[in-house]
Amino acid sequence: MNLDLSAIRHYCAYQERCHSEVRHKLLELGFRGATLEEAMAALIADDFLNEERFARSYSGGKFRVRQWGRRKIEQALKQKQVSAYCIRKGLQEIDPGDYYHTLQQLADKKWQELKSEKMPWIRKQKVLRYLLQKGYEADLVSGVLQER
Image (cartoon, rainbow, N blue to C red; front, side, top):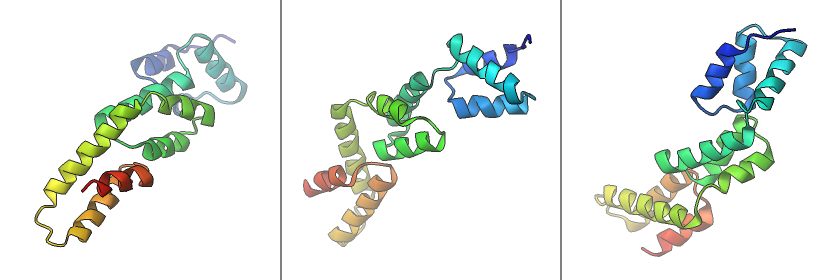
């Protein structure tokens, strides 16, 4: 069977995609069963689809642009049904020094935003919750807040 994959190739070339996104798009385009699997295999063989590359790109981007922590990135990748191996590879894109520096900057910025809060322990709790919501690990957040 000759498959017309030009639309889906363009979709994959535009930005990195995970397997679940591409599978969903193929379903939207009317691909089913064996035809869908053949299309997925062809995209992987032609290197339009690479889940490890996607995980690396996604992790690095979410950290640099959105300043997400590892936990939030990991959860987002799990939600996209990315394999545990690829998630580990993706998280390796984040430099530990940059990660800690970003965490400190976020803590400092939030601390300054909350300077009107009179009770220091409430201020600290608000910063703690903010950083945990951003996906940073509790032990690292506690360490950064101990420095205050």
